[in-house]
Length: 173
Image 1 (cartoon, rainbow, N blue to C red):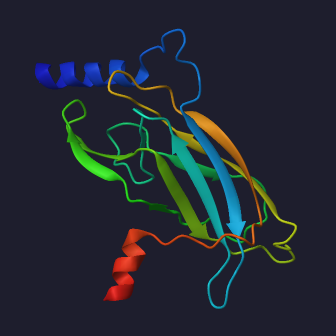
Image 2 (image 1 turned 120 degrees about the horizontal axis):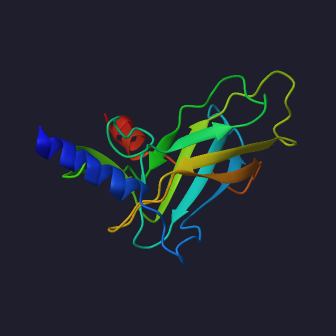
């Protein structure tokens, strides 16, 4: 019992330790675009998140009881329903001694994407979707307090929607 409480205390200190002077710079950035519908494939919202070298963020599906999972929030009423996002590449999963559970981490560049269903009367060519990625960035020594990284997405006809590794596997079956 005491060991578990000590591990929990260490986890809280680790994840919410004050940031030392000089570490206030953003280690995460987000940008987004909308890919056009093509054939039977819906338009997609794609959010590209870049995480600085030596840092990581947690997945959209990070289990409760551990670090803060990444969340995507959209503003406005341009969409008929909330998108179900996937990630590429898939998060790396490893057991974490501090949390005593598996953590799901993204490093470097990750794309979060989902097909979007537009609300009635919304013209995709004029659509401007605003939102944010709420992520907790960590390195080997500390974690930053979860922060919102804003983005604005507009139609980019030069881009195609990415495919998640899981979708590629499903297509082969």
